[in-house]
Image (cartoon, rainbow, N blue to C red):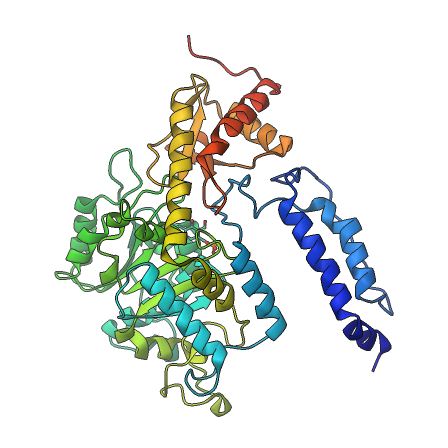
Length: 472
Ligand SMILES: Cc1ncc(COP(=O)(O)O)c(C=O)c1O
């Protein structure tokens, strides 16, 4: 064996100590830019011999570290990015160190599958979801939707009289949605349903939530055909919720698969004041949750929840039918035959650690503090003549624009704010108006940040090459 492997294994404590020190400095560095301020990228070449881990650490520190951004910090307000709690980080490191593959049948000696089932159970308790759902871990909300809609597709085909997993797609699968996240539409493409085949349902005036009358009308047009409905349990721009309870009631009259994308909105269930937004999701056939959002575990982690009554369809979709060495797909519940991946890391461990460490109250505190921060920021923007809200602050995302909402000016402001490095936000467009989103999803978000955020916005405004119009 090459000596360098043995030498590195012998020096592992020292190497890991160095990595740990780097990680701790990184996490506590309050000066690190929140978004990328560099336009170049490092380049690498593969050496013949390799120079060992110590050398790789040094090269990483010199050539990669200068490009790192403080995405796990509370100054990163772009997209819907959570950061990682201390417990989640510890669990994540352990997941790599113990390197288990949670595929085997739980209860037969495989603790990793038992941890995954346990973490799912903890999440179900956190969300007050009934025990009618199975659940599992995937890389994020996109793969969760892929898993859920994959089974939904199988369900529609079964209603149409055939086994799609075996026969391939033979008939169109009608899909209805009002404001699906782009990743759900991407799933329709990946699943062969066709992104263009989405039947667009109208939203309520000035809202991103489904117009139930239009939904009813679009269902009538289908004339009794089975279909999928993708509901929004928190849209990405304004965290608007479809009326999940009204959709649940429709299940009594119509034959459809009810999927709820609650990637981050599902965490509203943790706050008694906001849990009502999710009333009705317990009747869904499937639910998407994204753990690297409000659960604050490191990338990459999301969950699917699918009703246990659909397990046969789920196994029909994801079974390893041609591999007797992987066991009988029809046997015990088994992750190998109920999700898109076969071999996986123990992705549940960071979630399990964080849920065990902080419990229901810990997560309630994170969620309510983020919502409180979003509300304070929304209030500050409303009181400031330079800005206007694009929508009321419904939960933890603030969508706003300049009084002078010319797209060029708004984009220049986002760029300038991000180049300053203290805070990072992302641009958006709502009803044709260019705007900015600030998402509060981090366990360290706090209303005390708002005055600094406002002053950063004003400093960025002053530095703009364009002078924005101001109110008369
Ligand atoms: C509502 C919603 N669904 C799905 C996704 C996709 O999540 P991911 O990028 O983790 O796959 C997002 C990401 O922002 C989201 O906000």
